[in-house]
Image 1 (tube, rainbow, N blue to C red):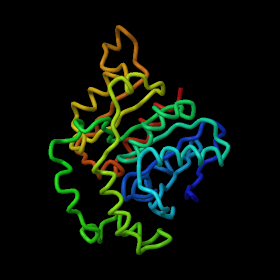
Image 2: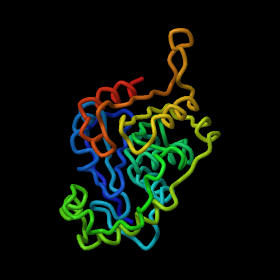
Image 3: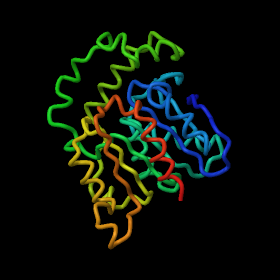
Amino acid sequence: MDIYHEDHGNDTGRPLVLVHGALSGIGTSFGTILPMLAKTRRVIAVELQAHGRTPDVDRPLTVEHFATDVVELLDRLGVERADVFGWSMGAAVALRLGTDHPDRVGRLVLASVSFDDDGLHPGLLDGIQDLQPEHLHGSEFHEEYLRTAPDPAGWANLVTKMKVLDASLPQWTPEQIRALAAPTMIVLADSDIVQPEHAVRMFRLLGGAVPGDLTGLPACRLAILPGTTHTSIPQRADWLAPMIEDFLTP
């Protein structure tokens, strides 16, 4: 499968891979923040199977497949290790990279991630199977798809496949989160699809929520964006870019 990607910036340090959200592409997920991040580092933005400019293939959409595809892309580009910034579904892909391919990951920035179903607001996905492709016509995601997809008529199939993924979201155990080797920054909107208590729980599992003046700062970080919803996180580039830059710079 040909995975569409864009390569920005020319820094010789460890590159940063951007992984978009479900039904989204590079533009709707990272259009504003990408040029900010590319000022100081090499940024590789991908579009996953059936999303954006990457065609669909005859296999289901799973976070595990997506993570393997990113590793294959890194192999093709000759990148041994990369930092990864993922939003929404892309954050789950980034987390899967961290747990299943730890030797390929430097640092992780996970925006709106839940490591198990309990992290989502109760009832959030109720009725998701009733979602029809036409319900999203006119949305920024659909408009981007029509502009970029190799087969604009594939939107209905993408939505159908995503509903299958949503019915069986990836799960991690607390032990897997605790064992995550990559320094990790968790980003959450204060009105997100993920409950703030879950983000704090994950932060604690990673070694955070300590009295830093006494113990020193942990390797992990937690950022909760005020007055922000799940889908408006990409609009907070002015806030996120300096925080991410500071986190990724040793």
